[in-house]
Image (cartoon, rainbow, N blue to C red; front, side, top):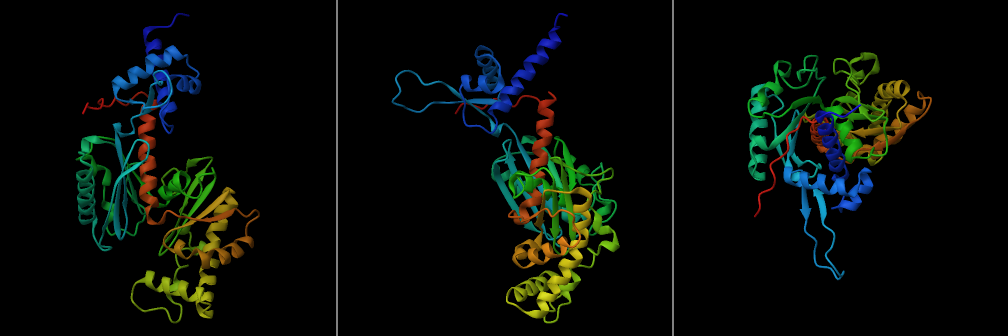
Length: 386
């Protein structure tokens, strides 16, 4: 059966895409190296890569001076700066906006405080100002952004709304997608913060070698994000991992053991009380160690339920309390051994409070990749000669 012009055009697109993927994540490459990675003939690669340069997807790396006789082979690189994405963490106490190129290299990042009692309009106003400052610092406009992902607390449905529960005041009435769509023409998605933190751990954190991961957010509130077979699990309504909503799991009240510990400062700030308890336990205080043990006992109930249901390779201990993993992980491990048939490895997150924004960047990059693979992404403007 003869191939049509449409078939030939699509084959050419797919061959160009194979070269794009061969360029991405690699050092500048010669035509011969690209032919080896793609399985295409060298003459075909030579033609296709020139088209990619003309379209703005690739650039020529001019060879430096060498002692080799003759002209060195021309090398090509993926133009990571052809487009950019935004990852945004809308938290209770902070707004964090990250801007990266198409390889995930961080270009700009800005953190601004947020009032815990702020309503949706006031909180989104801080988001707007933070985005403006990030784009201004990078010399960019909203039209330069190819995808935006936002992380929020609470389960997120398909429309980007948080309708079940969230600690953000009034946020069930917020529509962040509609708000941001007034300034960005690119795809915008919203995801739960625990789920994004799980994505970040597999991308740049302590779980890069695993496909089955439970991410545990341990702090003033407790939550979980799930990655199975290398895929983020959202669930039908976006509530996968929200096992803490079951009162029998005891996650809702587990931190109270820390806040009510005798001797903890009565500052009205639970985080200060928890930090005091962890430090006192570190120094051997009996009452503080008891409070930590009771906290981990309740924490272990929900973790064990997830481990028994999913059998993950790794449980990543993250969230604000991960800074005190040295006094939490041993008693947590001890409690888990009472319930789990097979103990997963426990690892402590090293991403701090940047995990949600980093996971948002990764999902935004995935959105760009999906459109690129589907042939739904227009070629970028070729770089201007200086």
